[in-house]
Length: 135
Length: 289
Image (tube, rainbow over all chains, first blue to last red):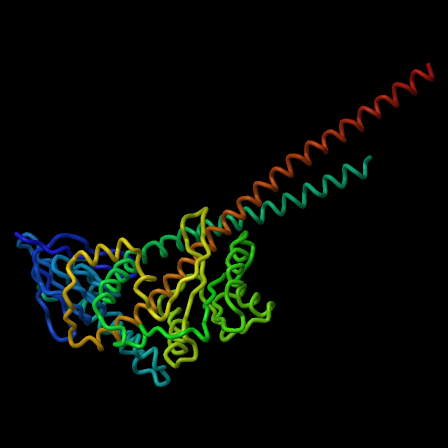
């Protein structure tokens, strides 16, 4: 069976690199399932859940903002966060959400900071979403 | 004779103190170096992948789509100099700043990140546009103001080209001063030829962009610039700490060698003094007897 070469990279490390059967990414226009021999595509992704199917097994990752490049045999995911489901710390994510919400309430928050805090919030929510879907 | 031995003793003591300081600095630099190196190296796969994406992208899209790709005749160039804040890191800054000479000071404005570069630009009376401070272990958010500033200058057409002068980290012993063109984003500058060839071999059908090419490009290109600047600063940091560690190790070794030589000389003089004294005593005794 044809496979896709999937690479997920963040600025800190190469998180995932393997041949897989299918990838589902949280595209900016909605979820996007990618199978081998997909037409070349480039799209932005939003924080959410990324599903990898390999040997019939599903792996779930929480990803942040970034981009996906798809060619016939290769999928490259560039994102600022990628955490595997079992590595997600639920308490830490909740704590991050609480802190972000608190920071948003602060009266004299700068434009840049709002964007940064919102990004953190989105990412933490994505982590929780991925973690909780298993239960 | 006694005065001379005292002088040497004093020198040995002072060199010992110096050696202690350089040794301590070497230890600190070594610890920082490990951190900075792993940070710089960790970002490379991301940068490589991004380069690959952009190379394959630029081959298949129209440069007129984004102002980031627009090539203009260079009337004014902006150079970002990434240097260190502190000295005592060997020839690192000297080598880096030598590269500044290749830019025409009439047509070039400079932006400094790091105090040494800023001082050099001021001293040689070149045009300095802005001066940014960078933390010791910066995050992407810390370097974003810098990249944002240069992007604004480029988009507003104040400058027609943006280059970065930084120290590329090769390994602990080798750091290479490098000039890289940041804007306009140019495919041949981005990736190596083999990469471009490898990508071209994958089939040259046009990309589908979702939602559309303009949106995707205007998202990915600024991000690319931000990340490039971040990565270059990390590289410079890794180079700085490596260079400092090596410089301090050399200083410590030299100090130790000097101490050894001086101790030898000190002992020789001391022995000579004792011998003369003994001779004097024996001669005096013989003269009396």
